[in-house]
Image (cartoon, rainbow, N blue to C red; front, side):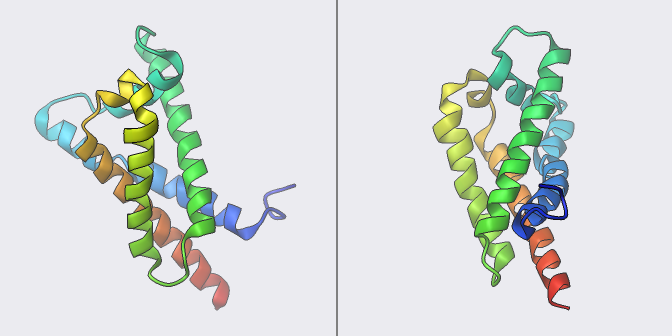
Length: 146
């Protein structure tokens, strides 16, 4: 199945994930810059899911980027399927809170690198992801109605 023959919700989700995945780290990055801490902490934590602790930083960052990309694509497609046509952005933000709880508090409890992250900062990152993804999905839906 090629890109043009894939279901529209898959295409919406992938495109939404590209934008949302890129912008979702803005809150925690902004905070890291303000507090002079590492802006790479979250991406390193994502790499720690696969590599555990003790891996070289370059490998951890590379794998972390892959993990983040995969999770962004996954959740972008999920949002492309489940977000309603009305109040899409509101539901995107609410869905992001649910995703944060699942990712960080339930599944994340199994990984020391995720547990070490500040939940509130990661929650804000997730909310940005959900809102940006919802905006992209909503705009793509509107464009098809024209």
